[in-house]
Length: 436
Image (cartoon, rainbow, N blue to C red; front, side, top):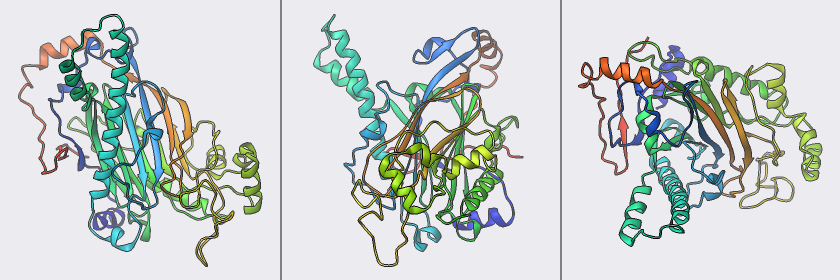
């Protein structure tokens, strides 16, 4: 991928693509996303306003170049609510070590595919658990389900949640999953990669952005890994990365040239990742306040909070209240922060605790209802997760009927081309579109 990133930087190309991994679609995408309220029962809807609310789960995790074991348990990461969410966004950084062979070599999707397998198993296990709880309640009144019906229900539940977009750039990886019954209402998926690392363009730092449209509302999720460094003034490099990502990320406009092109053109935007912003206090003071659990005093000196308040970067963006301990940097397989007792290798930099891993959002109709961390000790970072409700605009029934009347016969032959790969569970999609 690195030659493409270099060329895009040199020639100032702004382009997105449909080159990503996804589950093979088992049914056709509906023309123009025509909506039927009655067949979307899990959405909270309002017929008069033409809006619905969906639940969106978002997480970010720097895994420090450590490949996951096949039996890795991520239930703690996904147990955000009792009910299944509509959309799941899982972002990762450093899924491979950031060494020269990975940054300059050809892309290897083995690790990202392994993560997708772990996510698939966890999400569908959770989905089945929810379905089982509901059926148990029904059985108190009518215990008529036989063993064969239970087995059929289990098999169906295994495909309740599907991957609609999955994309890797060196160590940055984002995987997007939705409920199976929502897939017919999702259109125009696309990805855009921006490298901000070595030479200002390689993929050891930067972002992988994904976008899609659910009903009539556009979503954009930006998984980022910004410049590191704990010295005074290093936050300016991170601000510069953000500016580069916002200016260079671009998506196809679609055949009617009416789709959002830039990140901020979308209705709902969520930026997640290892943003690497630190705490602007002496290391001894930071460690003392962390030991006391004085998050308020620390957050008053948090670089990202200060940058957001001053408007130096991400003007108009929001972040929920942080009520959890700093997520970086931990000793290996430990709850102890690096530098307290474990000194590391000789000459290795000491790094004070910081909230490097963050989730921020932009746009009307997004409400964050949970923001917390989980306690996996796989890497020197702790995962961060958030739960949102997002307003989604839908077409009224009358509009649906009119479009069906005038367009169904005229465009019934239009199909979306798919190029099938040899993998078992995923295909690489190639969707054609016009670009400005």
